[in-house]
Image 1 (cartoon, rainbow, N blue to C red):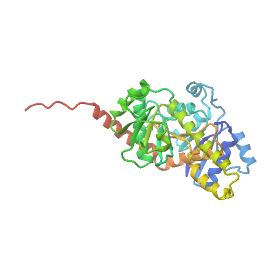
Image 2 (tube, rainbow, N blue to C red):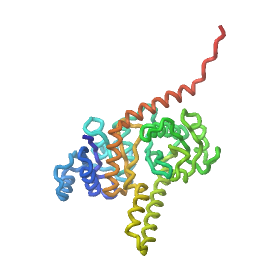
Image 3 (tube, helix red, strand yellow):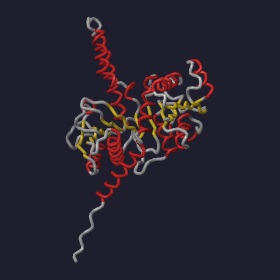
Image 4 (cartoon, helix red, strand yellow):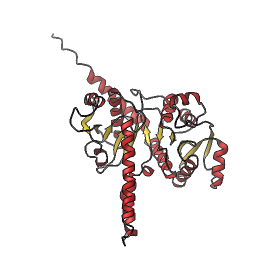
Length: 344
């Protein structure tokens, strides 16, 4: 039984969409226990309204971090915040993973304060596995750290490479730096300095990649950027996929074969929907933490829970810790000059 602590009050449509998402998971995966973390009386009422009394374990938490609050300050001040209580459940061995579709910053702060970080990680990034024409790739950071330094982007590259090794089964993933052109020297000062930092890492660095390389794929298995540009691009891709699907459906309105074509269209586009992709995984903390889109529907919440369950069952944290540790050791070894040979 995999136990997932689910933030009841996180998200634009909480708590109803969170409860409905939890029940979708339980209908499909009876070997998952969903722990709803929030006001118990509220959770009991919502479950009773759905004829699902007793289907979820309930843990009391009365506070929530609002989207307009400073996340770190709020997490420190609100010891009974839902996402902080959920993180404590993982720390204390009462749950295996945390899922929240609320404030990304609050989830990050709660994870760092409560669970701690893996060796070599100063600021954990959010990594999403996104579909591309040539296969899935790892894209990070998608929103945890809006400001970055060259050194931080180098950390993201190592964490992303370790994640791709574990999740995608790639022993030597190709790593690219998101910029405005493929040539070295393209981009702002951050990108220029980060290029040199990534080139010095013990990874297969392919240089700069552009925004179009994320949906097309083929050039890199891991695409690295700061959380601001990563979040903007991720939401842009989501919006483009939704728009394309809606336009195609509308264009088929008068087509006689419409009913036969719609399932084919859904099969071609559904995998790009945030409702199917699931949330992003917070890399570099000592526990499985998945953060979803604030506007998640019940299907989106369920996808986030399924992402967390997969991460737990594949031993993601321990395996990333091992892969990341190996890369860090190789980085440090490469940075130390070989001792001069002493003549005998």
